[in-house]
Amino acid sequence: MTDEVMRSIGRRVGEIRAWRGMTLRAVAELAGITESYLSRIERGERIVGRRSLLESIAAALRVAPSELAEQAFPPAAADPVTGEAQAAVMALEAALSDLDLGVLPDGAQARPWPAVAAEMNRLNTQRRPTCDYAAEGVVLPGLLNELHALYVTDPDHRVDVLQALGDCYQTAGVLLKNLGVRGLPTLAAFRARQVAEDLDDPAWLGLAAWLRGHTLGGTEGRPRMRQLSVRGAECAGEPPG
Image (cartoon, rainbow, N blue to C red; front, side):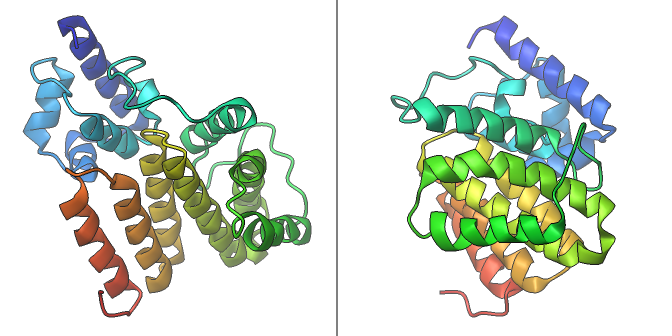
């Protein structure tokens, strides 16, 4: 990674953090690094030398890693996502990056809750059990848009909508992880955590913790993955395995 790329990443981190209105401390805590280390990254004095660090900072800022560094790291392996699945990944990246809980999506036109609930049922009973990634990827971006709109416009179904959002983010995280996509699974886990905190339900908090651990992967992430999996079991009221 060149010095110019390093400085560019730091500038982008600072710009997006300021745009989000987040403090250095808040972003650093979410990313699992110190405030001083993040400050030095923003000033271009420290490099983001690991893909996992880039992904953690991106998740803390609620953006895709590509928003911080377009070509900072070479691909880990040949990209298995092609054709229809590739288009779905691009749409999912936009949904994960752009949709914020409590903010009505631009141009949102959600169907009534019963229709969206029926679509969720098809996702959970037909597509997820068969690991039909292409079909999941096609419907998830639209469902996320509709559910975020319903969260704002249909308070009577708030809990149902939040639980559906949790299902969608879990599906997206596992889908993207299994397709070998970098960065976005971590962002999906971050979104799932936001939903779980709004639900304030131990079971959903546990699921979000498990998803965070699952999306870390890799040798260097295994201790953290174990820690989060145990936390997930504890949140759900189950003994850790």
